[in-house]
Length: 423
Image (cartoon, rainbow, N blue to C red; front, side, top):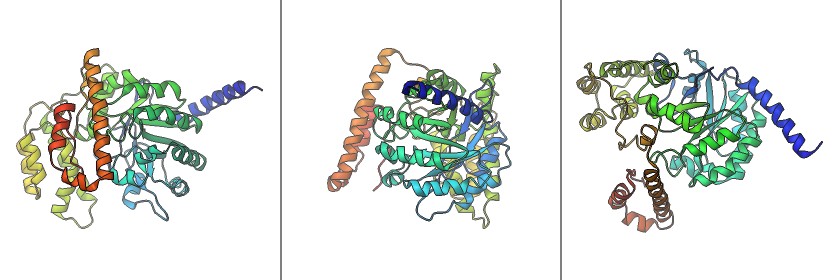
């Protein structure tokens, strides 16, 4: 048998095996919709609340940190063991040691999980500094070793969430053969690089390339702020589904709205009072999880979620929410802004601190506009690379230049805000 014939046979057998694997968790005639895991936000109480508003087709837990002799976080495990939403739950793991990751994957398979998901996309400097999450993308051979080892260790479904690369989209070409080689059961692609974080438009062309090449379902992630953006991203990528994070926190009805549009129905008209009800319910659900309730700590926990929700409600509301410390003041701010029947704003401000770069998914740009944006992004990536080099190689120079001048310059020339880097 020739090598080409053998490869074709393997691919045909894999295709049959793949169809059996995914039949039970991909919806028919509609895109798969998944809630993106966000640390300290998309926990069990949030899953309960969002499931009552349509919810995703399946959940992915917050990432479980893996290192030598580590144990799965008990609170995160409750998203699996006590989840009564009726949706499958994938357990996500993150780490840099392949042997330890395999050990954790075997432990997690003892629970009622839909599968194991590998995090290769977290852009946190702390995580990347440990060569985990998105930091592992700097070393494709290590990615190959990790994915291969986990594929061998996981008897059930094994999926991966990745970015396009660490610093350059071109790195994605070296990652695709790895995912293909190890026959993963699904790939979620956040269509930005790690260096991009959340500050640039997504790159749907790269996702489409993966969807055309890989034998597994490809799920697109990034900048889905409403149903229109979701369907436009699907059209651009030909992906099998969407993973939504920040957009679902701000609008928990987004999954149901996307389904309605796909079925030819008009999305439900929402008011600010609907949003107030969502906030109140989430406040109570999270409070139930606290053994020794502390009002101030609970309000601080809610603020992690509220910073996404208040985008588009006005600068005054956002600033007041950042300063709030008591339950009375918290609900006073919410009721002042939301206790009315005004229509809920469909999209957040494009240049907000947490949402930006989604214009192309709402109103496609002309070719000239796309070229201008591409040039800005090219300059922005080199600018951020230079800033990173100064911070890493010349800390004294960096400390002298840590003022606001470079962030203002980035906003002026590149059209987006750059968060202040921490020491």
